[in-house]
Length: 95
Image (cartoon, rainbow, N blue to C red):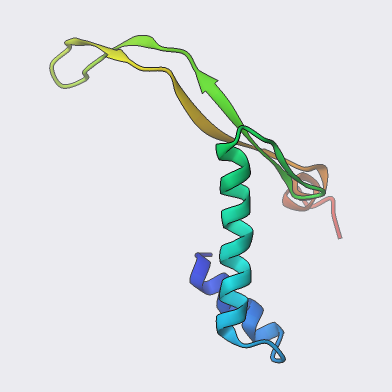
């Protein structure tokens, strides 16, 4: 599912809301998660999962095309850990 499909499904399920309002809500939701992670905060959605930031140390890598060694800088990467309810649903243990 992509963002526009999510917006359309929510708008269809909530006919009392305008689609532009649903779009604004969804965009705000994602922006708040992104902003919190950019500040290094953890975002937990109970039953769904938790978004956090992990840091990878600087290292020496290798260019696969030429075999040349290259310096790879330290970087922050997003990390998602599923919640128990989501894991159970995916494995057929939920309702």
